[in-house]
Amino acid sequence: MKFLNKQINRETVTDKAASGIAKGILKTQSGFEKYMLSLSKNWKGKQQWIFLYLVCLIFGGLSIIAIVNPFRVKDTNSSVIPKSIAVPKNIQQQYKSFAITENELKQVQEYKAKHPSLQQERPGLFDSLSMIEEVYYSQKK
Image (cartoon, rainbow, N blue to C red):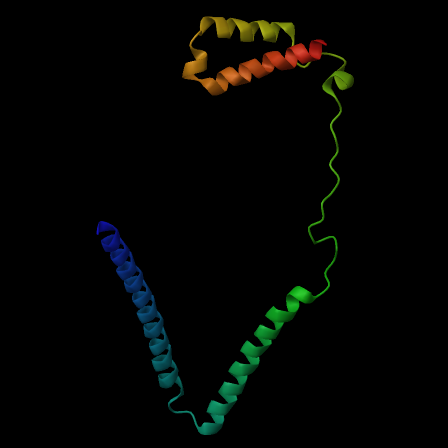
């Protein structure tokens, strides 16, 4: 039975939210209506028709622009086109030396020896240090 109560509560919350949003929209619309009525109550019929035509022309034009604009042909330079990726040269070929030196490898091994519980305390750091060792040994081959 608790399941049904939770479902009913969710429905009532959703209904309250929807009715609050609807009331807010109606309140805004009625406020705009009152403003426009106070603005145009002294206008003659011809002035009201001109204003109506102007509003229709402006918003109709903006709607047409919004619809047509995506279909216009644009520069291919501005669109998203994947560009070729330059593959970096191997570090050994570029500098003819190892990226990780023996001194750095010794420092990593000493740090691991000083902190035996490193894997439990900081597994990310331990993984990084292990990766440095792997890279060094792969360069050695």
